Image (cartoon, rainbow, N blue to C red; front, side):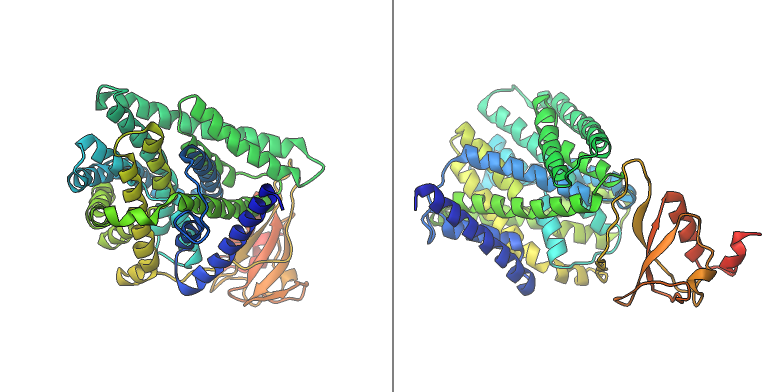
Amino acid sequence: MSGFELSLAAGAALLLLGVAAAKGAHRFGVPALLIFVGIGMLAGSDGLGGIEFTDMELARSIGVVALAYILFSGGLDTRWSTVRPVLAPGVVLATVGVAVTAGIVGVVAAWALDVPLATGLLLGAIVASTDAAAVFSVLRTRSVGLRSPIRPLLELESGSNDPMAVFLTIGLLALVVGDIDGPAELLPLFFLQMGLGAVGGVLWAKVGLLLINKLRLEDEGLYPVMTLALVALTYGSVSYLGGSGFLAVYVAGIVMANSHFVHERSLIRFHDALAWLMQIVMFGVLGLLAFPSQFPDVALRALIVAVALVVVARPVAVVLSLLPFRLGWRANAMVSWVGLRGAVPIILASFPLVEGIPEAATIFNVVFFVVLVSVAVQGTTIPAAAKLFGVATPVERKPSYPIEATAAPEADTDLRELVVPEGSAVTGRRVFELGLPPGALIVLVNREGVLVVPRGATDLLPGDRLMVLADDDGFRQMAALLEPSTTDPADEKGP
C-alpha cells in the first residue's frame, strides 16, 4: 500500500471515529467538539498516531473553508420570524460585546503573559467571539431547550460575531507588526467589511435563488453542487473585494432560508451533513496542530486568561450590550454562560504564527488552552445552568414524515405542518365537514406519533399535527380555520 492510500485510509478511519464519538458524546453529555479535538491530538505528533502536521497556512485555509460552510448551514437553519425579535440585541452583542470582551481579556493577558498591551489586545480579539459551530452543536446535541428569546439570540450572536473578531484580529495584528499607525485607521475598515459582507450576502443569495429555481436541472444531485459553488463564490468574491466573507455566507444562508427554492428540504439536510463533516475535519486538524507537551509551560497563565474571559469579560460584555433591551438578569446570566469558544479562536491564533511575530507560539498555546477550558466547562454545564437560572424549556422534537413535496420553481405550493390547538373549532369534526380552502389538502395526520392517512370521515383531535399541501394563501386560511373559535368552520364558507 502506497503512502497516498495509507493516508486516505487513516483519514477515513479518523472520520468514522469522529462520527462514532459524536454518538457517544451525545449519550454521555460531553460536547462532540471536545471529542473531535481530542481525536486530532491523539493522532498528532504528541499522541499515539505520531502524525507530524505543522503547516499553519494549510490549517488556516482548511479552517476558513470549513467555517464558511458551517456558517452558511447555520444561516440556512435560521428563520427570519425567529431572528427578527432579537435582531437589535444580537447585532449589538456581536459587535460591541466582542469589542468589550477583547478589551478586558487583552488587558488581563498583557499582565498575565508579560507582553505589550497591543499583543495582549490581539490575544483578546482572537478569543472574543463565541463560536457558531460550538454553540449550534452543543445546543442541538445536548437537546437544550431555552426560553425565548435566549436561544435565537445565542444562535444569531454566534453566527454573526465572527466577522467582528476577524476584523479586530487582522487590525490589531497590523498594528503589532507596524502596517498601520494607530487604531483610528481601523474604523473605516470596519464599515467597509461589514457593509460589503451584508450587501454581498444578500446579492449572492438572490443570484443563487434565481439559478436554483430557473435552471431546472435534470439531475437532482447537481443542486447541492450548485450551492457548494455558491458558498465558495460568496465568500471568495466578498473577501477579495475587502468585505467580510464570513458575514456574507451567513447572511446568504438566512436570505435563502426565508425564501422558496427547489429541493429546499434535501438541500438543508445536505448542508447540515456537510457542516458536521466540516466540524470533524476542522477540529481534527486543529487537534493535530496542538502540542500538549507544551501546555504545562503556559497552563497557569492560560488559566488566568480563561477565568478572566468566562467570569469577568463575557458577563460584563453581555450586561453592557443588553442593558438597553432589558431582557432580565436570568437571560443575561444564561447568555453570559453560553459564551462557548471553538475553532474560530484557534484559526485566528494561526494568523500571528503565519506573520511570525515573537509571541505567536505562546498566543497559540494559550488560545488552545482557553478553548479547551471553555468547551469542557461551559459546554458540559449548559443544561445545569439553564435549570439554575430558570430558563430551561422542554425541547420540541420535530417529527419526521415519510413524504416530501418538491414544488415546481414557478409554484408556491408546499407541504407544511399545522397543529390543531386546544379549543379549536374543528375539534371532533370530520375532514369532509371542515370546508377546506380551495387548493388545500390534508395529506397526513400525526396523532401522538401514529401516522394516519386522512379520509373524509376522519375526526380531528386537539394536538393533531396535520401535513397540509397548499399555497401561501391556503396555509393562511387553514391556520385561521384551526384557531379556537365559537364559529362553526362550516359556516365560514358562506353560501
